[in-house]
Picture 1 (cartoon, rainbow, N blue to C red):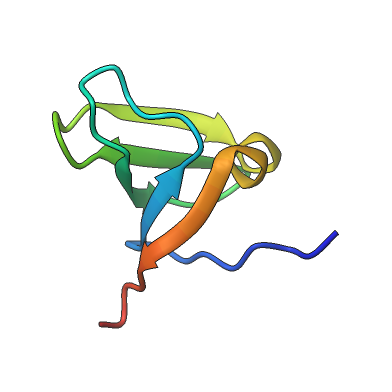
Picture 2 (cartoon, rainbow, N blue to C red; picture 1 turned 60 degrees about the vertical axis):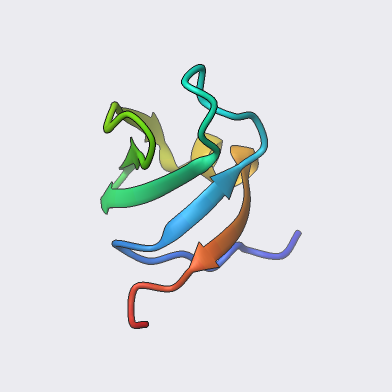
Length: 65
């Protein structure tokens, strides 16, 4: 399986949208767990890295841009 590339402050799209209707998330913390913040309602969620890699669809915006 190909490892997905993502970095701190990237904007990512998840497979399922947040209940507020937004599907864009910003990575705000990385480690064993990854904290992501909803771009619609600013709710943040911390999930294990392995689970995040499985639920992430694609990177929409790289942090360096």
